[in-house]
Structure formats: C-alpha cells, structure tokens
Length: 248
View 1 (cartoon, one colour):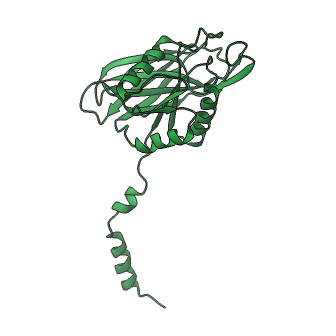
View 2: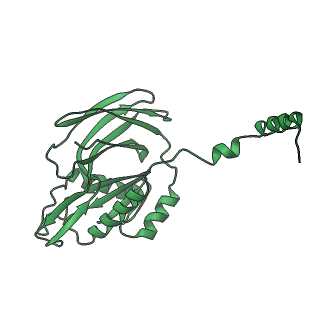
View 3: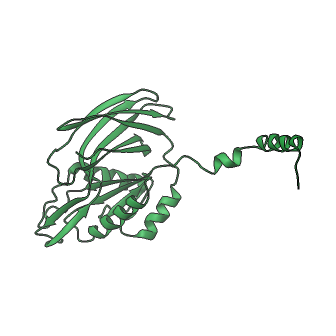
C-alpha cells in the first residue's frame, strides 16, 4: 500500500503531538538505596551478612553500602581494627528512632527507616521495597583532588527547604582480614564499605557548594575507595550519593 507524501506528513505530525508523559515516566531517575551494616569481626554471625550485602552492592549500582564496625564485641578475644564507639552510638540512635527492642550484629538499617538482620535476604529486600525512593534530596558529590594522604571533595545539595547536616565517609571495599582469635578465629573475613575516615559539615543549605578533606591511608591493602555523602535531618538520612575514587 502506498502512502502519499501529504498523508505521511500528517501522520508524523500526529505522532509528534502525542503526550510524552508515559514515556518520560518509564525511565525515572535512579534513587539511591542506603544500606548501613552494623557489624563486628568479633561476631560469628556477621560474615554471612557481609557476603550477602557485598553481592547486593555489586549487582545494583544504586546500592550505597556502609560497613560501620561497632566496638562492643571487642572483649570476646579479638579487637576489631575497624571498630569505633562512633558507630556504636550511631547504631543506638537508630535503634531508639526505629523502636528496635535491642541493638545487635549484624543489623542493617535501610534508607534510615527500617532495620533487620543483615543476613536475612528476604527481610532486607522487603525493607528496600518499603522505603524505595525515600531519599528525595539531591546530593551532588564531586572529587576535587586525590592527594598522597587525603581526598578533597565538593558537595552541593538540592530539594531541601532548610539547613541540614552532611555526613561524609571515606570507605574501602575488598578488605581482607585474617582473624586469629575470637568467634571468627582462624577465618579470613572479607568486608566492603569499611569506614576509614569520617567528617561532618554542619548546617549545609540548598544550593551552597561546600568542600571537605578526608585523610586517606596510602598503604591501605585494597585501594578500592569510595566517598559517601549522607544528608541528614533530625530523623535520619534524606539524601545520599557516592563517588568511586580512581585506583592509585
């Protein structure tokens, strides 16, 4: 069947006039999925959570994984070299806000709104589904300069009506540790998202560019680093972003 040039022109114009709403909505901007794992090398239940969440991160580029090692298991025969009371206090704060009956390891907090056992795959997926798209503030994180012993970054936030605090983390992936004692004695443990450095920018406002410098250990074994930025209000994270650093 032949179509005249006149009819073809009308057909093209008609197609151009169709509403684009459905097409635009079919490809929404990807939302970050923030997973905070409270873990310890002194906990025999934690390696399973480390393994599962590492695979989840590798399979989904939207996942932002933080491994926050707590210090309350350090008296069980092995002192976790990555542990800090800072992460113990952060976990306690989440437990209070979320109404958890207790703090434990391996405990995950998803998008700052749900908590569950980090090795429980069904529970983690359910928490992700229930909180999907909740981190609505935009965090524009950029690497300025990577020096021998530090990393300089800039960050700007959008879609927030008032000043909020910005938590910045330098994290390391692919960390391997041989644990000689404790509940995991004789095992080699693998970690992703280990927090190596931490800084806070207080009262950051929408549209204002801020900068920070984080110390970086040039002798770190894996050299697989990311910078993670979390914008938080009094209830927890409202925006997140991550930036991988070039291997040196």
